[in-house]
Length: 114
Length: 117
Image 1 (cartoon, each protein chain N blue to C red):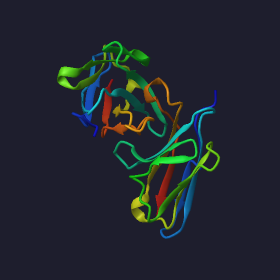
Image 2: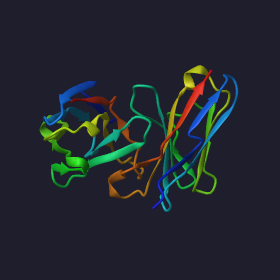
Image 3: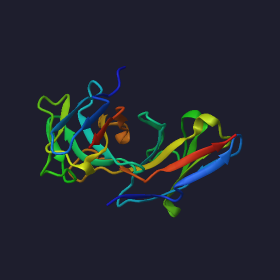
Image 4: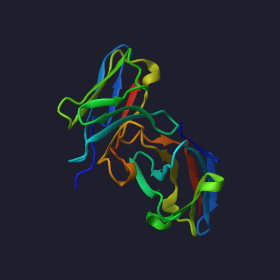
């Protein structure tokens, strides 16, 4: 079974430019999560999708961050414009909604903003 | 609201000796609790999970954890450390929102496990 796929794995951009990350969850998983992991910290939830609906985006900085999951399968997280403080690893996870919320994580995208 | 406190940012043990990584949680409801491991430059991997069944939970690679409601603890243990266990370990709590569906996971800050040869 294929796991959660994320791309790109690494991204280096200059500040003030836009950047986007893509995630394809495990087939059949209706719930999709985006997390941000700062250096030396645990991941923090940015947004949660149930199918195509964003049901929890309270931690998403909406002035510069946006996300979409148009067909309820893959998802894109965008930052525009990027700031130095956005440097982090962006993790995508998916869950079937069963098994007590066991989430499966992708390898992450490591973003460096210069 | 839920929260997790990992009591040690770093733990160093000798190979072949026991491992203890401490975790306390706070939750308004009956939580699900997890331990995840993250090796350098690799993704998060689930070690084990507590889901209100047995309080002693066995996971992969010889790890286990005991849920103690009276102490609000979920400490991770392993009888004998191996060099390959060196990694970052995260204690995680999850609740279900009142509107249904599972909330995002709340992670502790992590414990860096160092294995001395």
